[in-house]
Image (tube, rainbow, N blue to C red; front, side, top):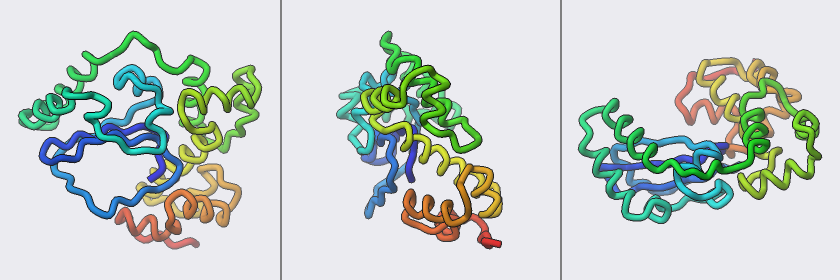
Length: 217
């Protein structure tokens, strides 16, 4: 599904260890070989501090973890595989990622504030209004996002709104209420956006994630 975060997936029972970047489109993998593992969501600042690359370099793609971490990805997988339970997994991750913290602070503060503002906005936030809040031009904000995050602020806003809708659907919210609460103009707008972002209708999306069937009325 579309995501505003980068995701580090560490499979320690199989060969699949990857980094997936933020993306505005769904991706279907015809075959997977997942075993047991953990996934970690990374913000723009987290990608730079922990992986040593700007988020734009992983945006829209999927990369082997070894290409980012080198030989240390094997070390991480082995340490996780030896951990006896979930709390131990997270302790291993904390130690490993803390040791990788870089001095570079990553994206500039304005871009980070704008990114978080888009994640947390309960209503549909216009990018021009966000630029005014931050006292910069819309063009400046768009350039900073493209240079540092790899997605436009408008795309980040669309994905964040879609993710909020997914969270509401997991709580069995009705489709019309979800559309209103997530800032969609109306039900047809919600339907179009869900299809554009996932390739599915809202009802099909609920069924895909094995949520209870939700009627449109």
